[in-house]
Image (cartoon, rainbow, N blue to C red):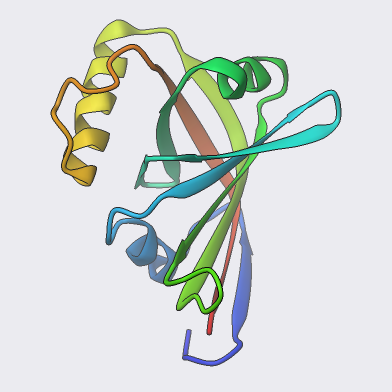
Length: 138
């Protein structure tokens, strides 16, 4: 996409230009879950690869995901008042109850953000299968 106020929406796939944004700099993502038909949004570290997002979480977000796997994940680069771009993903989350998979994902995510490999090891792995993706450049 060119600069300006362009936007694109693609169902069931993540175009290369969005993949490039998601796999670049280690930016915080905002994970939106739902509880009792009310949104709950919280920042998370994430890792994207081939149409799947990995996050590690616990507490309310995890409980919400177990009750309702439909999620949204938003990422932006730049200051809130003047972002360079924003990406929004809609998808379905799966809680992964596998210690080895969780440990491996935790290490991948921590390396992306420059943290110790075993930091946050008490969290639970959640994989999000992306159903649609949209982005906007400014």
